[in-house]
Image 1: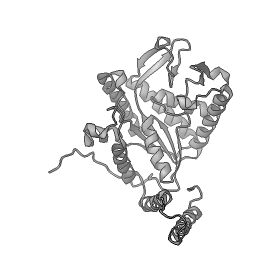
Image 2 (image 1 turned 30 degrees about the vertical axis):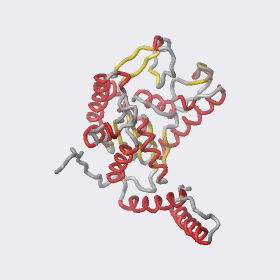
Image 3 (image 1 turned 135 degrees about the vertical axis):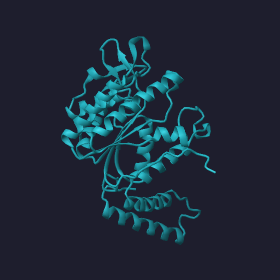
Length: 316
């Protein structure tokens, strides 16, 4: 008896991720989930330098600014609730120091510029089609930072607007890195603050736009994390207590689907060795000074050195 609706996958025979790949991830908090998994398994990756970015216009903005080498200044930050912040970045870049925020913004932009030029894979996770436009500047912001909603106009990006934004992102990046592969996915996080119906409308706009642009752009692919959550994991036991975010079981399940379909066979085997080392490093011995534990540490260090000789970016 089959008690699940399984999402069909067809493993790509090219463009697969291995331990020589360089990966950049931008987007919603689900990018963080996958990015942390890639980091744990020692893939060379850069994750959300500007913090979580929920919608395509925010991603478009940081990429355009990074590629044109925008220099962030005090005009790009503001002071609220005893913190300096930027409408272009997540609150993780906020600080009590104005100079520090500006420095972090410029470092993040340089990081994206370098990653775009050198990466083999670009993973973009879209969270919502809802955006907030500043009444003062007329610009769409990446994050409101709890500024009064009276200062913004809430808008739903149309399928055409999302299509245009994503197409621009792809075109800008492929101008300087034509061989890069794009992996797009929709975040399974439910944005219920917008409303249940409004969340579904928002997700549908993202999905419709992606399935229009992916077929016409070479090396662009779709990974159905949203569909796996909605269909294969159709149960509230796979959510955190807030009933909005996928819990660790769901994250692990979707990560498993990802690596089964996007990692090369060689990478899958090497990942097993990385896991053994990680678990060895996490092991807490009963007697750390025992001869047996010292031999264990020596063997573990030998495995680490062997990996580092082959892949210089790997560091434990």
